[in-house]
Amino acid sequence: MALNIVLHEPEIPANTGNIVRTCAATGTRLHLIKPLGFSTDDKMLKRAGLDYWHFVDIKYYDSIQELYDTYPQGRFFYATTKTERFYTDVQYQDEDFLVFGKETAGIPMDILKKNWDMTITIPMGELIRSLNLSNSAAIIVYEALRQLNFPYLK
Image (cartoon, rainbow, N blue to C red; front, side, top):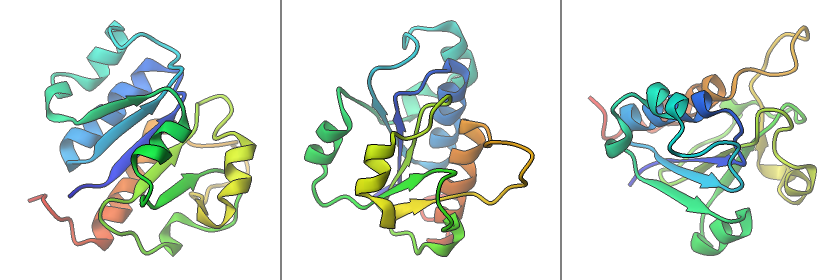
């Protein structure tokens, strides 16, 4: 039993490394959709994740469809700045998938359109386009864990 973070084509190794650290701290699984904008041997990726890599269940996929095929009963939420539904308006369940897009473009619009009723956003001021990817993942995963009463955490 665990939550799942999905990174769709992440580009910046330090963000993915930071998310690895969040996953280690929360018992969250990490799913990476290729292509990745870096090598998994990247020094920045390893440094950001510190020595927590071995604590995280990380899976790789060639496409988001492969992820869907692997988890046909999965419940997926898509983080985007293009929706009005706050991430706090959702009742999360154990095993949910929290999907985040690449840093420069977010989740592709065709994926969002097919899943519009499952899109969520983090409210923010109008002066910026978006929050940092690793910060966004942490904010949403901790809200989901709060709602679930922080299972498997002390």
